[in-house]
Length: 190
Image 1 (cartoon, rainbow, N blue to C red):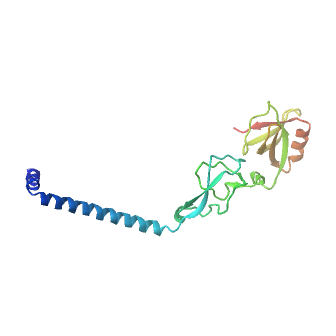
Image 2 (image 1 turned 60 degrees about the vertical axis):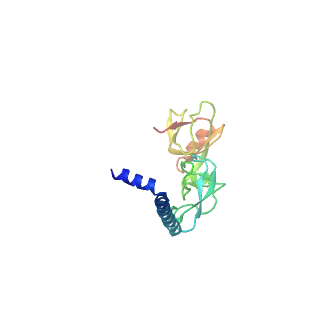
Image 3 (image 1 turned 90 degrees about the horizontal axis):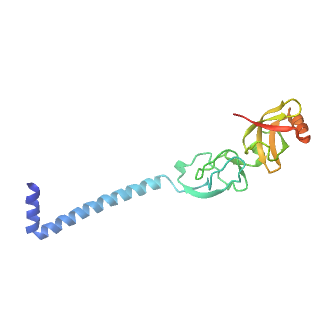
């Protein structure tokens, strides 16, 4: 009932109609201006943007570090975010596209295996187990009764003709001997 009276009043008094429209527009503009100012204050409180490096594509261990620089508010940047351009390094763990690169995500190829390990190349062909960099495998001497010569070897490089594994220093000579005589076979975990 009240709505009908207001509509009737506004229809008869066109000037009142336009005053009401102007007041409502002013209220909306004031609210939007206040919200915009509050948003700008919050943005300034976060500080100037900091350059961080993010993965330009999904990376798996051993992949070249494909990265791009982006600006992010310091408040949301991890303290371990990489400050310098990591191009030229390789992924040490899986990294998703768009993920901020942090210390431990990338490094040189040697960092794929612990310092107490030795790298040994095992011949590969079409019968070799399909492995990827970062996989953990055992090395078996196929001729010596299937003897396990190294456990928990980490795959650090894969080429069409060889798989380079990082093995414990104590087992490196046995793995190298089996590899030299083409007796070494890789067995995957799990």
